[in-house]
Length: 373
Image 1 (cartoon, rainbow, N blue to C red):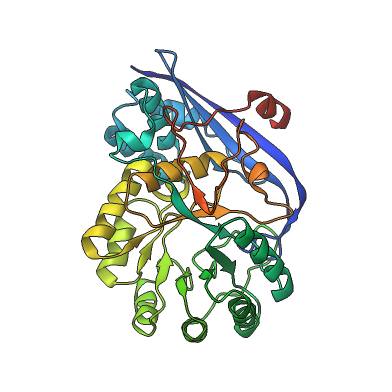
Image 2: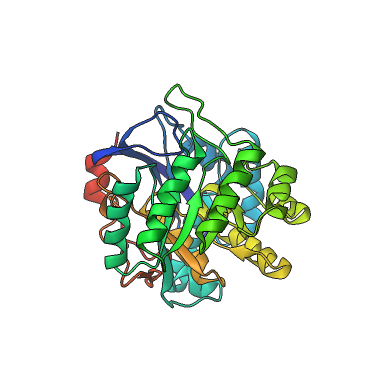
């Protein structure tokens, strides 16, 4: 089998309400921009993958074609070497590997997780917020998620005063004493698309937050409290608290995860199959985590194809939690998965990986045509 071509579709899907993403300082998102890629083969099997886009986007179709046409999509390790070359030239590339696994699974007639030794057992999901909101709004949100069966919720911190964020967590803990909480500070990186830089925590502020979370109790982790490659300061923070420190969602390749392990910077490794590692190297990071006693909990916040890719990765590892992006009224599951014929849903707080061959998702090509720029 050979790859014969790449097709890139730039999609813009209007959201039902504005969404203030915490990782875009000062920004308000009114649409979901996605670059959808098809990888075609000479045997008529096509794989898909998708990456969040941005204003203007990048025309990567000729770049990927120059590297991948003529290659056998089953030779994932070999192709990853070519993708490293693409990344050296300045374009993120690992997400295209997901399309290779979609092809391999369709060719074998099996879901990706089964090819990687996994199973289709439902995975506990945590409802992942995406915006910083006051306590009363968050109480309503949490009540709705608990009613749906979720046993964990991730909050976004990033107010000018860290005590404001801690007060939100305290309020939720008082109302929901048995709910597991996660906290994401989004200090690992940010997208400065709205003309603002945003406030990054100092080590002292990160320690203040960690101490506050210790007092609140039942907090699974504090995510990205400091810049993602500040390994030594992350290690200092980790040594100062009993709260698990998490990160690595957009840290590409394996070398940076080796640094996290060598420096003892994190407790929870969170590579995203779309943003960071692809599926194969994501499973390798899971193996590193298991060998050295770390937790593995991939980041999944992108789009429906990204969530599906990470679900296959989760199903092939010993991960405990699946991040389930859900921030009404703008970023609802059906908006996140707009390009899919069926929304990936939870049942009683659990999510099950798709079990059709490959990624196991069907693209709604009518929607693609309607939303393509």
